[in-house]
Image 1 (cartoon, rainbow, N blue to C red):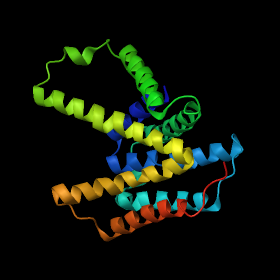
Image 2 (tube, rainbow, N blue to C red):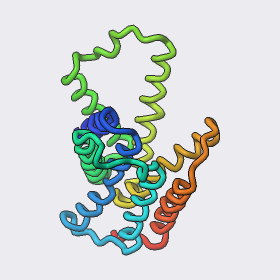
Image 3 (cartoon, helix red, strand yellow):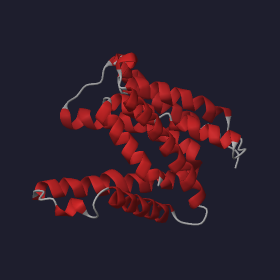
Length: 217
């Protein structure tokens, strides 16, 4: 259910505000995960991990160019939906961590996607997507996004959660906009601005900070 909620709220946020703002809002999840670990799970988190959280968020802020956004002009529903996606992302991460105590990371992803598909087929007419006359090219891109943009990324994310726990994995996930920028540079010729390069450096620095000291088990 958390995965379905995360997908819906994130896409709805994008429909109301621009992608940069939606990404920035969703990547507030590490703060929520760390808060949950400290307050509810009573886990001890190293000072390096706590320091890496704001560094990663600031880096993400610069990386997506959020400094150009007029926050007061953003759609209120979009902001709320973006924050809801952060909450859903945090919930998914925490629940996945608990689930992987009994199941493999890919099994957890399988059940998460299964329940998400059930929810979507309740909200929409069952299997309605397969009754639409898409072109072969469109079906290829649907397949590509489903496998390489959903199943594999979430499976690898769960592998990360299984190895380094949800707090650290969610911080590492802020590397996503950095990788997107690198791919855009290589294939689209897009060049990052100085502040974006600074943001990328901060995200990478936050990930390096995580390697300095492990959180107590």
